[in-house]
Length: 200
Picture 1 (cartoon, rainbow, N blue to C red):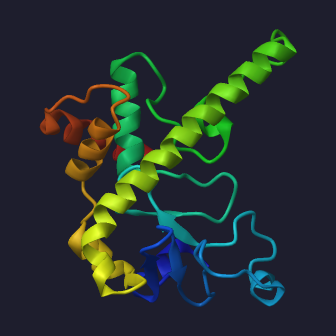
Picture 2: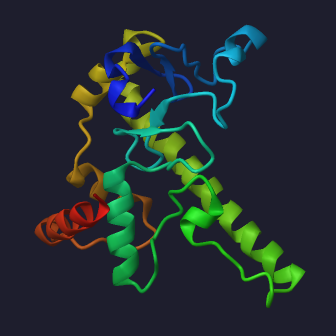
């Protein structure tokens, strides 16, 4: 099913683990819910047994999660990471791809020693773990005022309370603290417009 056909109103944010649950037409389960063989059948043929999750950086926008080639960061956070990374001479500032190749972590096997390959993979793993730790902290910060409501809230309510935006992505990136972000949002918006026009 194409992402555009998913009903976002059918999803809920688990206020315990921070992942999406429910969904339609297939039931998506968060990390707190048991995964039974019957439930897993509906996800046969997919690398990841879910359709959507929250962005690992801003924890506001959604990302599709069906394959090992899916992004962990939303389009806006990927844009901010790319622009800031380029300011500092990198492809991107954060590893927002699920697969290391998506993040530019490629060591030429012909010239690299086994030690260099292992070191590169270990460094990528540490960056990924740090990003997941950030996601947990940022999620808890946003979820705290909503936890009195119950174990979950509709995704639409989450995004009404915490709307995805360029400003939210820049704020999250800046607080993550890997590289300083220019406070010139106009410059970022212009770069985002160029980025989106070339992505089509």
